[in-house]
Image (tube, rainbow, N blue to C red):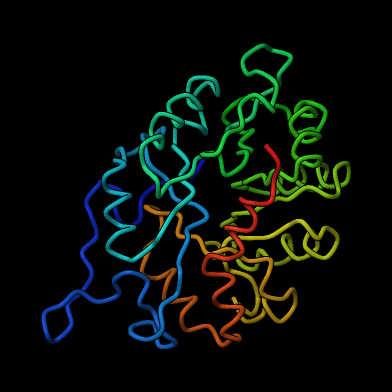
Amino acid sequence: MPNPGGAGAGGGAYTPPERDDGSQARMEGEVGMDGTDGPRLELHDALAFYGRPEFGESVGMGSLLSAMGAEGIGSAVAASYEQFYAPPDVSNEAAAKAVADEPRLRRLIAMAPTSTGELPAPESVMDAKAAGLLLCPGKLGMVRRPVFLKEWFGFAQDRKVPIWYVLQGNADFEFAADILERYPSLRMVLFHSDSWPNSRKVFPLMDCYGGVCAGTSDIIWMGGIEGYVARFGGGRLVFSTRYPERYVGAAKRALATADIPEADRRRIAGANLLELMGGFAL
């Protein structure tokens, strides 16, 4: 599961630096080519965390919302840490309640085999607040073979529901490859922080499957954002912060200073994610 320890891990809100005139910098998406001031980017975060991890301090929802406000992020897909290790029926219900009254947040639905009776059929758990499905087999004790979640993968492919996959190592990449071989039209968003260069694992999947994209919070591949856009275009990368494990300002600056066409920058900043979430049928 994700390992918190970056900015905000203790739950404190991030305070942006001040300009010379005393006003706060980098507010409301006001990020330009130099990473500070300039034309606004409409920022939407594809992955942020809150809740209590297995180890470490809890991250309050208020801390996440404060960080979003301070850095001008309009909306976020928020996953609770509990969804990576707690029973999915319990963690999904808690996640639904956590984001129900917050218009800036969408949630993910952790999957489990429907044959166990823990979760109902996939079509009955999706609603307007669900951004997609969350694949986290490791701590939930699931075997990494597509047959164990076939109802979910078939549903996701047929309805074009995106799957978020926070990969932890080679076993997860092998699982992703097995899933995509069987369900080649799946939409899957990869987040992976393996040792450099993880492009050796990400790029082959991208080459073979057009529905695979990746989050900017995990760019440690050869060529960075520029190399990714040059190879795959600007439509298969989504802005993400992985708050509180990463610094939100660093994620913004990496995108703002990337030497890519402005149209691609804006797609990555938010348009790709909004299109991904808005493209499936409930």
